Structures are given as C-alpha cells and as structure tokens.
Length: 495
Image 1: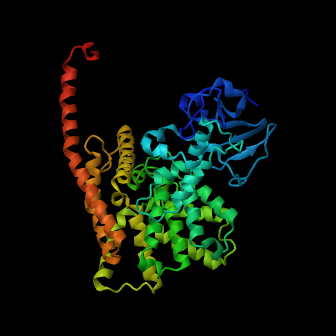
Image 2: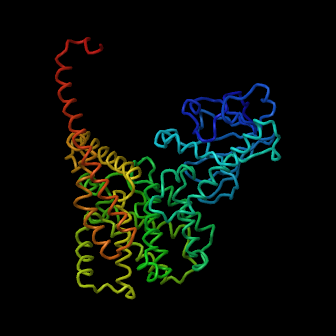
C-alpha cells in the first residue's frame, strides 16, 4: 500500500485538482467536520482513511479505510473494478461486480466545475451532512463511525430521476451527480419505469453491460456528440412518450425501440459531419456509399453491441432481427440532410388528417418524428441549458473547421470561426430547421409541453438576436486593434 502523506482534505463537492493527479501523493479524509476545510492536527489520528494517486497511472485510486487496504481502478467510464494487493484476475469486457459505493466521485474532471454555479454546488450538501456537521460543532458524537463518500451524490441523483419527465431537467447536473454515467443511469431507470425489463424478460446483467458499452462507445472528448447528449435526447424522448396521443397508442415494443434509439442514435460519432468524411475519403463514406454515412454507422454499431451482449438472444430470431431493422429505421431518420423529406411527409399527413396511430406504419413514423424532435430540441430548452448546448455544438463545428484549414480542405458551412459566430449559427439553425419541425409537432400534439417548447424557442432566438450586435462590436474592435498593434515597433507591444 502506498504511504499516505498528509494533505489538505478535499471537500466532497470538488473534483481532484489536476496538480494533485500529476504527482504521487494522497488526500486524507475523516468523519469530522474537517471535510469542510483543512484538518485539525489533533484530529489526524481519527481520520478514516486516505486516497493516494500515482503519477505513472492516474486512473488508479489507492484507497485505505479503517486499516483495510483495497485497490480500486477506474477504466475511463467503466464501472469500478476491485483488485487485490497482490494482483487481480482478468475480466472480460463489461463483466463487473455490483458495488454499493462508487469512489469515482473523487476522480471527476476538473473542467466541469466552472460550468456549475456556486449556489448549485452548495445544494449538493444534503440535509444529512448538514445535520452531521451541526452535531459535531455542538460536540455531540455521531452514532455511525463511517459515512460513504457517494451517499449524497446518489441521493441527489435519485431525487432528480423522480422528476425525469420535467422539461427543465438539468442533464449537466445529473451527469455530474452520476459521475459521468448519466446515460447508463437514466436509460436503466426509464427501462425499469416502463416495466420493459420484466415485460421482455431482459437479463439485468446483459442490460447493464449493454448500457455500459453504449456509453463507452461515445467519444466524450467531443464537445457535443457525446454520451451526455445521448442522455439528453433519451430524456426528451421520455417526455414525448408521455404525451397523451403517444401514451395511449404506442405499444411496449414501440417504447423500448424509442428509448434504445435515443440512447444509441449518435453511437461512436467521430465529432465531424458527413461532408467531412466524404471529402477526406473516409472508409465509412465508402462503406455506406456517401449516403447517411454517420446514421448507418450509429445503427450498425448499436446492432453490434446488441449482438455482443446478446440482449435479445432469448427472443425468436425473427423478432430480434425485426427489432434491429426498426431500430435502424428510427436512427436513420435523424439524418439532418433528409429533414425536408420527413417534414413534408409529416405536414401532408397533418393537412389530410389521415394519421392513424392504430396503424403500425403510422405509429412508427410518429416515433421517427419524435426522435427527430428529441435530437434537435436543445433550442427549445430553458435558456440556461440551451445556451450551454449551443456553445458546445458550435465549438465542435469550429474544431472541424480548424482541421479543414490545417489540411487545406474547403471549410464546411458554419465551421469557420472567422466568419461565423455562435449567434449566427444558432439563429440560422432555429429559423430554418427547428422552428418548422416543432411548429408541425405542435399541430400534431397541441399540449402544454409543445407550447412550452415553442415559447422557449422564441425567447432563446430573441436572446441570440440581442447578442449579435455585441459580437459584431467585439469583432470590429479586434479588427481595429490588430493593424495598430502590427504598426507598433517590436518590443513596444509588451507594454
């Protein structure tokens, strides 16, 4: 076991600083009120354990609690795997023990802290912790000598899941509370909520393994197309499935396919769009003949994980293949290049009032439209959430543009950071893509949720319009400063 040096205690609501991870060291923790500040030297003998980090393997956590030494290792977003002091038995991919406590909360990414307001962080301290601290300050001994590190985080996540049907659901906060496992936690909860696991007699081990592999196959270095986006789309899909017209018409199979399609609709997304893959002669573009390249890849990747985990192996072969085909039909509908095709068909049905949800094909088409709405619903979220998504998707666009410039390729539309701003990109997207789709969806399902989404869309568009003059002034000021700075003699620019 590594020797645990005495370092300041890290509060549970803060991630481990990068400078701590860059060297060998330790963080102590105790059951006293020192959780909220530096430990009192007189209380060091009462500490409950310590965590040390090895700079040669920053994914390993060496945890010592009450004299018992156990080594926990974190592999990216996979579950914690238990290892002994002398070695460990190799595990197959996805096989993992079920642990009651997740110690990875202390190993979350530091860059996520800045995006959460201090007031919201303070809310993470539960009443139980407040009560414990108050007792300690009054000198009243507590009864339980050991408190699990993740108890508060799990409690907050469970409270959020109770309101998973709310359109104001903060997926960013939920992802933090689940330590980056929002897609696994939310999808598993919804499958249980709808009774799909019992109804389809799904093996819980296979279900969890499938969801773990799905989350792993999302590229979390993508600013936008990552597992958090997939979780957000899944939550939006749940909101649409609750709408009266769908709730009373969709079958359990439709609901299962809708949730699985939402969770896997961007699986293994490379962070660039289809035109980029085509003009760089990517093998995926050749494989799918430049047609719905990404969507075909997402679908095939999802099918691969379904077969690898044998999630539907207990079903008749024909039923399993049929579910894979329908899953593909849903995912392929998210191809933005076919937006007008689906929208025109949807508008025609609404004009003729011939949509019959008792018809299997019509029901599947409505499910396709619901997934399309869920996929691009970010502009219809409250401003605090919508703005974050807008910044993330634009960051991903601009990153692609930088790559294209670097390799002397034609810069794709909306990907040039020098000629586009976040406001420009979002206003155009809302005007030509989002508004037409959600206007027709409101015609189909004229409910409070539809009106709420259109209301947020209108307000968010106005907010971006209001920000345009500010961005233009900033760009103009930068343009006037740059020539003047070049005119200065060398050395004077440092003043």
